[in-house]
Amino acid sequence: MRATEATRIYFDAAADQLDLSPSMRRLLLTAKREVQVSIPIELDSGELATFIGYRVQHNDARGPLKGGLRYHPQVDLDEVRGLAALMTWKTAVVNIPYGGAKGGVSVDPAARSLRELERITRRFVDEIHDLFGPDVDIPAPDMGTNAEMMAWIMNQYGKYRGFSPACVTGKPVEYHGLPGREEATGRGVGTLTLKLLGRLGRRIPGTRVAIQGFGNVGTHTAKYLADAECRIVAVGDAGAAYHRSAGLDVLDLLRHAREHGGRLSGFTGGDAITAAELLATDCDVLIPAALGGVLTTANAGSVRAPIIIEAANAPVEPDADGIFAQRGTLVLPDILANAGGVTASWFEWVQNRQHYQWGINRVRQELDRILGESFEQVWQLAQSRQVSLRTAAYMLGVGRVAKATVLGGVA
Ligand code: NAD
Image (cartoon, rainbow, N blue to C red; front, side):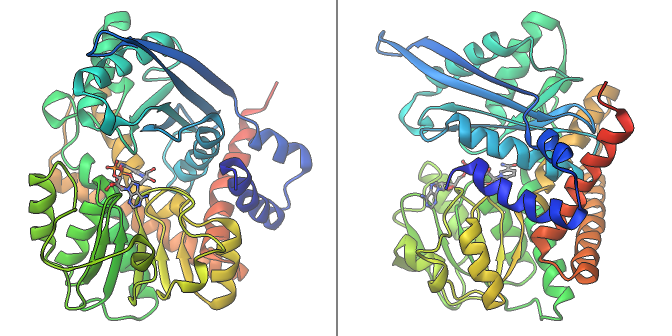
């Protein structure tokens, strides 16, 4: 299913509950601006290669546009459009003063050298520097991009506009970044998982967790939940997956990945399983933390976990979501589950503007507070309206954006 179609289905369910008019629905679903640019660079071989970059600025009714930048071969305009809308609802769910945007370049970062990636990133900034900035639209890392690339973005943007650290978030701590930003999405996934388990009256120590994806989000989620005495029984990435019913040693997994270019392949502390077996692991909590669209009608029936936490963006397709709802499988939706990243990005942006820096403890404390309050609001709304957690989260997010639109006016 196309990304925009999936987000539209979830939006409609909330809009029906909120009784939004057709004209307000059309306004909220229509992106403010969509940009596609060509990114020609010289490869290390001396050959010329042209990549395609996108930035979709969905809605800025609640504040400057905010959203990650994804480097992946499957990036296209539809995917970026769908992800940009998700950002609008996500920033509204956690009630931070931003709108939503997303960007991406259709490139396989694993197949390109660091210098080629730097040339792509700087050239992308050259093409869109007049469309983003501290008060306009603030990019951040997403799949396939990292803190180093955010530093290149700030540096390149500065060549046009001077010193502007708040033009991008997720920067290295040594280069105007925020202590705790890198762990924030995974920490948030972990915190919210514990909140949900608590609300359901389930015991946390010994909870069996399976995680798909062992990048930024997957690693920090695994670490946080292992520290809370959960048992990480299965973990996988793009190349391999491993299972151990007594629990994998997360520190060992992290060490292995660090020593093998971030990859899990060759890990000896568990039994190798297939990617399909990972999703069907006998466990209490399944956490997809890699790509979108991984849980579909084809495999939803084989999922054994009673709880799914959407750490990735859009990992559950709407038809699979319907199957889970029927079966009583609880899904904590992406627009809440992975909102820790954008919340910490907001802290980074605020501090860049104040030329001040918080310590890690304050970052964690504020992050936990905002996510905890947002979870409670979503939970209460789901209970009082007898809707799914996803519909409740969308109701909260879409409702806030609609309200801001009315208050600001459109003329
Ligand atoms: P990343 O690039 O750091 O890691 C991605 C991981 O997914 C890697 O381990 C990779 O091997 C794995 N992967 C890729 N294809 C796979 C496949 N087919 N099967 C299994 N594993 C596969 O990316 P990330 O930043 O951790 O982002 C992961 C997800 O979380 C994305 O959906 C992203 O949009 C979402 N997200 C990230 C952030 C953030 O702050 N980084 C914030 C919100 C949402």
